Image (cartoon, rainbow over all chains, first blue to last red; front, side):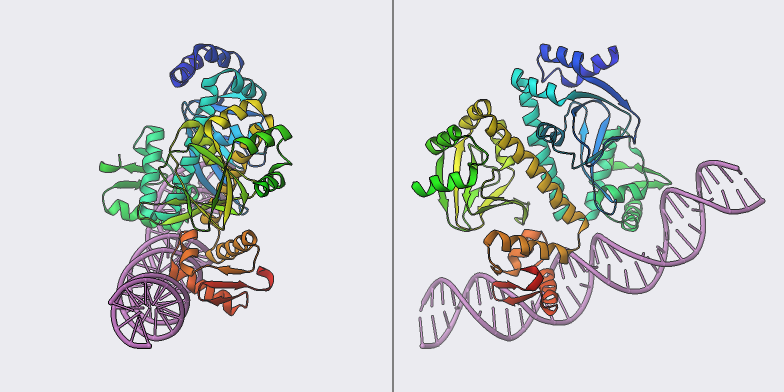
Length: 215
Length: 215
DNA sequence: ACACTTATGTAATAATGTTACCGATTTTTT
DNA sequence: AAAAAATCGGTAACATTATTACATAAGTGT
């Protein structure tokens, strides 16, 4: 898997020592998934923790009525703090994760992770760093829900999406945006229409083209 | 400090081994604060991590306009995951913490914590356990903001408060509730009035008495 | 060509947020 | 003790967001 080795080094060589990189190469399991595929379900045991080599994973919460809500993304070179924590404590997953685009992940078994926690300071640092980053991401998310107006949140969300996909043309429906922001499709349509009138974007069926300052 | 020793054992003896309890007693610093006092400010470095012996600490986020928003409580026998993570990574605090009632805390220096992480499995377990619990608490909080109606959220919040204080008579203003839930005082007054008409509580100046099913 | 599904637009109504103002009570100052 | 200032809660008017229902348009499969 020469490709994956290259991707591993590209994404993680600045934070891990060579020996750990070699061990990761040897022991982690490479996993490829197409956009949209479920990577982890709510309630499922966490036997392995992910490291993203390519693409991004979407981490969501699903409520009792089946509505989803976007918590954060795990991007290239990152890990998932909730997986680390739940894996170590043998706690079932409180979140659902899906592939945002076509994704390549390394899975590290929880036992392996334990070993590396003791053996490699850089791994321990990576895990703790991920914890801090993710706590702060979630807090910022709460900031947004609690304090920001919806039109700002939509704009920020579209810009995020555009950064992750690397394109200003997003393939997404109004319903999907509403789900990810935990609100209603009608509200999203209304506000997108307003943004279109303000020449900030163009609307097509299942597509949104970001213009000017939003790009 | 015989009292604090008793409190320490009462709160933590079921999760820590005797030797660790002895070390905590010897090395942690006891800190008492009256209700309302600030324990940690946003942006402040985290040099020590807290363990609550008596009372509860309120953990909030403050936005750019100075509005606060309640993230979670740290109660007797618990630690603070964000403090653990930020302490270890030398990251400044993303949250503000205040005493919810009169509180007694033990402060453990970050260096001490590092030592215990390696030396005592029960300490490591405590830290990781706290991480999981707090992640899930924050996710549940997001569930509430994103999915629940305000009247439910108010009722749940009042019940939480009543459990923490151990009384069905709460000393609190409408403004405080609004702050904690990240909403507006007028809205809270309106909904509390409705709950009073439904005979679920009684309103007084700076006091709310929970009735019947809410108790 | 047809039914079927999905995506978006529109309108009416409900819930929540915002601003402004009032009177009542408590606290502080004089 | 009287006056002034600050805090608390009630009310109204209006803005924003949520919910429900329905219409129209665009894609899908037979």
